[in-house]
Image 1 (cartoon, rainbow, N blue to C red):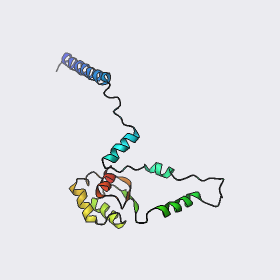
Image 2: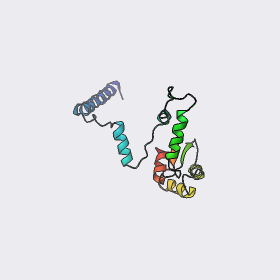
Image 3: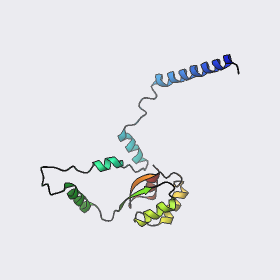
Image 4: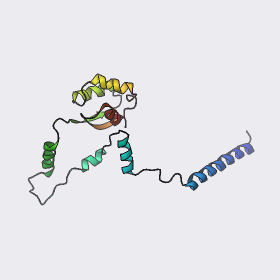
Length: 158
């Protein structure tokens, strides 16, 4: 290919890209396509996903100490005791840490050991049958024993 043909091809690509960009931005189709955080959360909940706070925000939700109160009294401890008494004792919460090269079997065994699921083999079969085992992400995930297999799978594969 000689120099003139290469320059012509490049000019055509630039011209076509300019035309497409003009129509895309000129018609306003791109505006309003990004949902707000609340809209995104609502959409995910409707589709059956479990939406949780990021780890940093969950740590910030602890009440700060009030210096006006008794300095020997720890308000964080009091709030934790009150929260524990209000919670249903049958609900178990567990933070699972999924590491590199962890298998679905190891995850299922860990969840069964912590009483999150009743049958590790059944959960593993569900993950494999629905192709969730290939999509498991690395990280820390908060799960409870009242979550369905689908909710657990969605949490682990977010």
